[in-house]
Length: 451
Image (cartoon, rainbow, N blue to C red; front, side):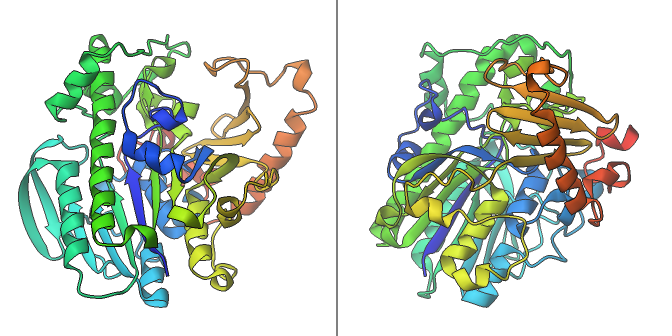
């Protein structure tokens, strides 16, 4: 069986990689994965905030099914939010005898408590977000450790140490949660920051057309007059992560594991860095937003000669990645798992278009549901029952509502049908988005609980 490494970054927007069109950023190792793997250009998060997206990846379920609707803050920190679910690492360990490990960010409650379905646990404890260069508090299995340095470098060194010292020949699954792209962005290596300070990069300085209030880290960690410095530091964080990815790939090569390993590069959700006049993600504004920059994520699959290198435009998300991993390992077992994801294994093995792989992509967050089809986005605000239709080809600012435009009178009923079908699927779920007012208080700042 194939080894599996998942790089699951934090707040890394799809737009912020060279392989997705950003020519200001330097990331040669991730470029290598893209050039020699499969890059998905229409990859999305099912819920655009840290904890729910991670819960979806680990369970293969929507937020309406697993119940983690927002980031886990003080109210939810002491609970194991995945306790009642058969997680991906649990399945890989018990069913397929994988050697399972996690390094870096967990953010699904009880960070300092090792989960039995991970053979090795190296997770940072504390309150998010952290500074990037400092003395970090980690829990390695059952031992607390204080380690000074750049966080993502520490995580990289710990993974490389673990992989070299393994005493078994089992296939391994490693979840590597880098955090460098999360604010505050100060604290990355000066040489990388200086590279972007001395580079003529393009800055986003959009007007906040919708006049949204910025909140949380979007408001706290970077005043508006320092946007240029923010972008330079954000880009430096990506180059820093890229170096860490390269070091891990080198370790796989010298241990003769690179050809036997599937590498998945993705993130929990996206981020606006001046886009729409916003610095933050979906919870960085009131009302919450589902801007493209917030919901689009990078997704690159590398597996040497075992896949067909290409760039694909099919809709995919974390639920599909969960399903694909299982399908790759055991196609028969994949047919029996409980997930709302759909395996995209066949998309890795052929350049056939498979246009109908997924007709739409659905994202839910708080009181909002977005449905993507082609380059249209239909949003329903469940608190007001108002609907919005964006034509992203005509309006990249997403400030115009085409819902009453006569040109789209035949399109709106199609989206209404998709919405009603989704409602039928999740209305009776234990944690349904349609019951948003009664969701559990996880972060302490969910704006929809007060609507």
